[in-house]
Image 1: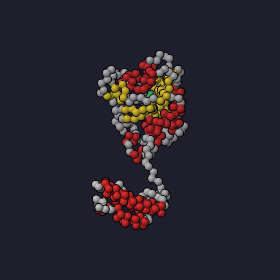
Image 2: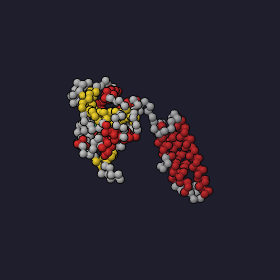
Image 3: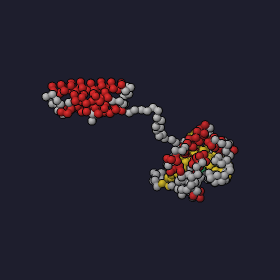
Image 4: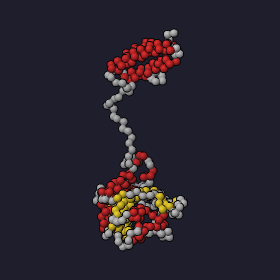
Length: 348
Ligand code: PHE
C-alpha cells in the first residue's frame, strides 16, 4: 500500500495544488491565507496529513509515509519562504499601514475628588504635617463623646448619624463616622504635642440628598497642637492652603460657628474663585463659598486625650473636599461626584 489511510491526503496532491498558488500570491495577505490553509493547526491540509500519520498501523509503512510527507512539507515551506522574500520579507497575515493614526488605548484617570484630596494632602505635607487615615466605622466615643458631645447633648442632633447595630464585646455603640474629627483624640492619645496632622477621608450623614447635600462625602481634618497656637496662625494656614490649591490669592472669612469641640468655633468661607467675588451659581451670588468648620480646640478634648490641663493650645479644621472640588472646577451639583457617569468624570 502506498497511500495514507485517508486517501485524499496524499501529500503529493498538496504539492500539485499549493505550489502554483504560492508562486502566484501577490500580497502578504494572500500569502497568509495560503499559509493558513496549509498549516492551520486544526484545519490546515498539510497539518491534517501529518496528523493522520499516527493512524497508520504498520510501522514500516508509517515510516515510509512519514518520510514522504516530510519531503512535501519541506518543499512547501521552502516555497512559502521564497514567496515571503519576494513580497519583502514580511511574515504576518496582517498588513500594517504605518501612515494610519494609532489607536489610543483607553486609559484610566483620577476622580476629581481624588485630585483635590491629593493636591491638598501634598500642600500640607510640604508644610510638615503628618498624614493619617482613619476608621470609617467608628465607636460613638471617638466620633462624639470625646469631642465634648455627650449623649444627652443637643449637638448630637446637628449631624444625622448612621448608627450600626453591631454588638461589641465592650458594649460600645458604633456609627459610620459623621466627620473626620473622629481622628483628633485618637491621634492625640498616641502622641504628645507638638502635633501637626491632616486626615483625609470619607464621611457619612443620614441626609436627604440634593444639589448641595450628599449622604457620603469627603473631608480633610487638620489639627495643630502646641504651646501658644493662635487663631491668626489658623487663618494664615487656611489662606495659604486655599490659595495654593485654587491657584489664586483667595481671602478667608471667619463667621461664628458652633462645634462643641472648639471654642471659639467658626465657619470659614473662601472668596469665590469662579466669579472673583462678583456673584455666580457656585457661590449662590454671595461672592463667598462656605468651605469648612474650624476653631480653637476645646479644653475638654485635651482632657479626653489625657493632656495636662492648661498646658497646650491648638486649632482644628474640617475641610469639605467636595465643596472645594466644586469651587475649583465650577461644579454646581454635588450629586455628580457619586453618579459615576463616565462622560462627566472623563472631563477631569
Ligand atoms: N467636624 C466638623 C464638620 O463635620 C468640621 C470641624 C472640624 C469643625 C474641626 C471644627 C473643627 O463639619
